[in-house]
Image (cartoon, rainbow, N blue to C red; front, side, top):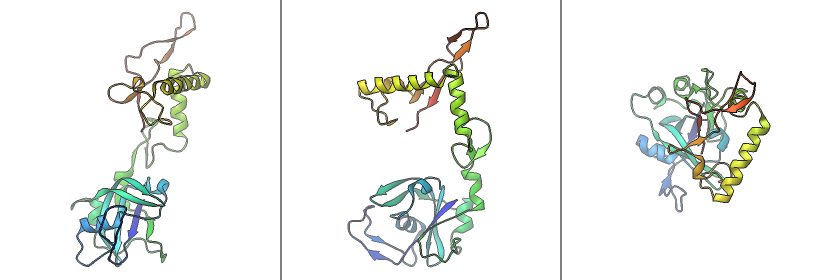
Length: 229
């Protein structure tokens, strides 16, 4: 899905959260000006806007700019988009720029959402569990649990208790060291990460067939996962 943001009429402003001297639409506005005017600030769900890839800036019933969303900032009860206008030649931009507002609901709400067939090639990505399927989210439904279960089996002898004990140990150590990382609760310490910022996991547990005991052995493939900020 994409978000549609509908501009009102041009008006000068003071104390704008984005340090703009005016908001709204005026004739002969460039795409860059329309994007800057339209990217904020709006009352919208941060959870929902976090799933959008593109934004359509609409004024006087026509799409005046099409931008790629790279993030957002929160200003009290409103949200501003971070990103950039799409360049000429981008299939989403070329399909909608100058066209009629694709969100024809009759609602007075300036914030709307719509599915754009042209965006599918950009929003689909590999599921985080490694299954090879595509999704518009980090994981397909239920695959986040599958990924966690796989890590518990690989690194913690298939024991959730060992996993929880390890997490508790990491948090306790980080709290005593005064961690600087923002996961979780700003408690992770630099010693828990490699130079590239990836979290150091315990060595994988493997079974010794000779005596049936589980032992920790170094993995030649590496035992790291990317640390999420």
